[in-house]
Length: 400
Image (tube, rainbow, N blue to C red; front, side, top):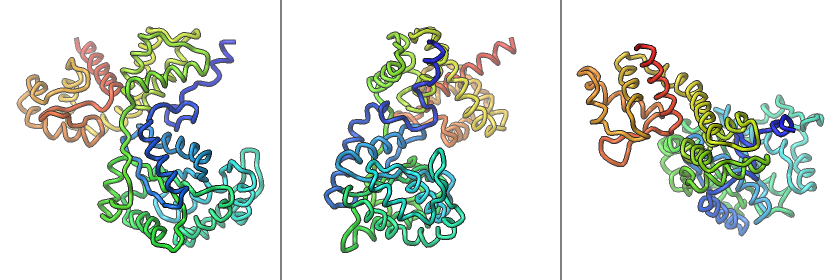
């Protein structure tokens, strides 16, 4: 019985969450649903969903897409552009997504497959086979006629849907390119200025840095998007998430365990899934106890350390002075925030001279952000902070 229940974790580290596990974000959901209603009434909308990595942008877009298909009735497609670095790549990924999706209304799905018949091969166990050679040959034409392609797509669905919802996600490979910024601007403006605008809700997901990249490449892009900036989840939302997830597999969680998982994940969905998944596998019964939560937090910190701190931070710091500053910083007894003046006290004269550059480097690496007060810095998350502290204390023990 226990082995069968452990067959599937209710957590999804590194993936958008299932709709049934989505919690909170009421303000952001309401904002995007207002845009969906506008589109259903014939007014195109464009929204840029932004926030730091792992904040839940993709999950929010997925949730809104599913809601919008039900009401007000928008046919939605979520295009992942992770490996795309040209408009032709984006066109290929768009057609693949449309061809492989399962429209909620069968007649629409049949009509869309007929529309894309030249790119669809034999039916396979897990879906359809895409004729990529043919699709790549046509990709330049599709990318140049992206809006006409969307219009043709909607004509196959307009009797049963009131508009389209298109999510462009994982745009890292495209955001720094001039042509992508102009592509977005032209797509929105050409549609808005046409005699009969396509009822389209365009949602682009990316970090604030990616948004700045796009605006830097083509300043007019700034005016075409409404910006939805996603913040960390509240303590109440985080507790609801953990409680609902464990309840889904008939597990309960003790109040202190819930507090620990909530505290150390810090409202970041990527870390909530990480610590929740660790707790699920560590728990031997049907209750997440305080001891389970402590071990889950430590396991999650080790995971963050291996994948982020060791791979992206330690490897980027080759200066021995920087490494010494990091060790001393990690050993300090604070939660997330610290004052530069506090750290300086324990540094050598050479290290103090290099401290400013070190702090800026840590910000660029995504370890620290500036605090609200002058000279204040904050660790982005508690698991990174915890891992660095564990490493520093372990090294100190080895040296004594």
